Image (cartoon, rainbow, N blue to C red):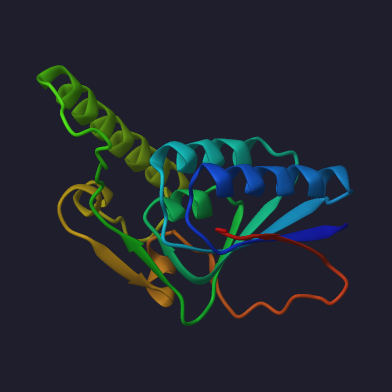
Amino acid sequence: MTEHIVHFHCQIDQSTSERFRDSCLQAIEEGASSLLLNLSTTGGSTNFGFTLYTFLKSLPVPLCAINAGNIESMGIILFLAANRRITTPHSRFLIHPMNWYFSQNSVDHQRLREYLSSLDNDLARYVKIYEIETAAAETQLDIFKCLSAEEKVIAAHESLAYGIAHEVRQPVFAGDLKHWKISGA
């Protein structure tokens, strides 16, 4: 079994998502029979976060995700795509209310309704994915409340009860593994 490590320590945007996708596919083309996703992200685009989740779920190899520091916002959706999820002892997770950035100077009622509908749909998609991936949790988190009203910071050891992570430990990478690095620049 050949495991490759993909390091993703940046925002989720179009550029980083494309490089992440390409690195995962290249690793599989080069013989990876499993992928270790070493993650630390403040989140980013909901569009690209949901796309990466679906992409990762479609891969034909087992995935293990590691929270290497902070997994925030849409990064949690990325993290939850893995079959096995590890969080390091001093890491954390942050879930906070969703927001929308306006790129236009002027909007009309129709455009505002469209933005609201999109934001509501993103909220519903996030809640559904979270509920599916943490269904076996011993403690159910009111994820809708966290995404719409009140943020929640979750320490590494707390993430086990919420079903976000399966294990708390400090991984040590074997020296002979192939590494793929994604940066925000």
